[in-house]
Image 1 (cartoon, rainbow, N blue to C red):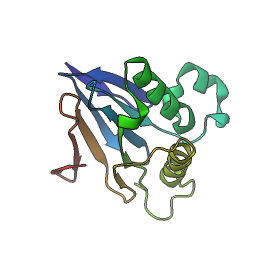
Image 2 (cartoon, rainbow, N blue to C red):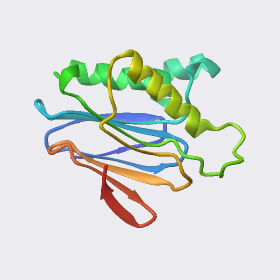
Image 3 (tube, rainbow, N blue to C red):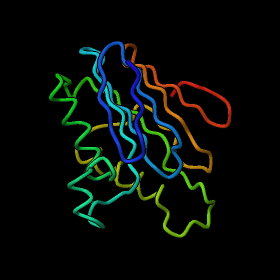
Length: 157
């Protein structure tokens, strides 16, 4: 089954599923996969901190890195994933407006992600972050393969 993750959204899939998200600019795209139970998820978080709008965070925790990342991991644990087996990959967190982008959303998204992972003793296996290019993630939950499309090229992440 194919799932499309919209901005500020998250999807969990199992063996046989393909999960895709498009247009990762400053947003964080986070893929988490447990190869033993073949369950994985993809988060497309827009903003770093939910404290800017707690009401929106309660209604849609996937919109924010600080609430979306724990939601993704906890949802996978509920499906049988185990922390020690998880493969974690990140993409996005760029500056699509260039170096003069005032709010530095991409950089802040990446900083919040790294802090959350560090506090929970989780390492990124791979990342493709920063820059000005938009990215698309194709995540095959059957194999755990993550393909990243950007500027007309597709490569493994």
